[in-house]
Image (cartoon, rainbow, N blue to C red; front, side):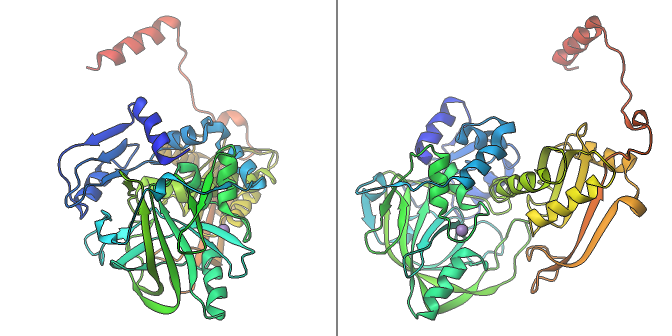
Length: 448
Ligand code: MN
């Protein structure tokens, strides 16, 4: 249940593209990653300039691969996540793991990528970080970007959520916060780490449930924190109680530069890795970034909206909405007004959500033209539009107030009104005989 075992599976399915030519971690690998961004294969860069280490990218780049990793069909994905959130289970702690094979302290040997033109330098973007509260009672695991400052220091972006809270608690006691920074872990661990769980639930416990009780952790050597025993690379560090630096600018999920902020410094204590470790890269604002952040939120939206309407068919935090700001939900409604309640539930389920569209079950939420058609033929702005001003949204949205996070939310109820006959909203069909169906298929194979 490691990244490696998943890659072996994907190799057998022909989902891995091997890049044997030499490529540089500075811009070249990110450029190739971007060109394969949409539904692309896993990329394995085997000849990385200035390094003996291979770089793997786009591991969780498609919905199908994520389902594959969790052993579920597309329509069972949200249930699988929701069930794991409800039944976290402590992983086994083991003495030894593959990640302990080599110990070194030189971070500069790791091929960390520099992604975009105005980036201040290399950034680690796939790191899963574990920490405990200083009294040892609370554990947290989450994904954070890390800017490489020098071979001994990183800057960490702490959005005011759980790890930030643990750091604040340590800061009040004037002690540094021990962290284990794991890179190259099974996709289930990444999904658990980006799930919206309550403070106090360890995301490793949820990952363990997702992995059918097969997650093993090791205790770090120098700090009081834990990491998956079969991770590719683990950095042991301490988040300083008082040292902060200007972090960024960094390209976040929207593909624009986030603002520069004062953020804490991580002092690196130790680096350990597998003998032939693979470095996992993740392109900021790429589809993989959107899926990892968005999928767990889709599950939350699915669950919350399901409580207010008879049935939710599908949820899509769309790629165009950065996998974070826009959602399309297909529902079954009983009464007019259910559409608006579904919109309100979606905004409650995902506080960063800005625009939401609800459609009927005949609309494919993953087909944007279909969604637009529903808006064109089933929506009246004076009746079906919902606007909420000055609500808390995402600071990643350039059009919002990025200091306070205040934004305007808009909901579009594009379900057909029940007051008019159903037929008026149905797409006209052309009758098809078996003969014409077969002929059409043949013509498409010829592709002229
Ligand atoms: Mn948490």
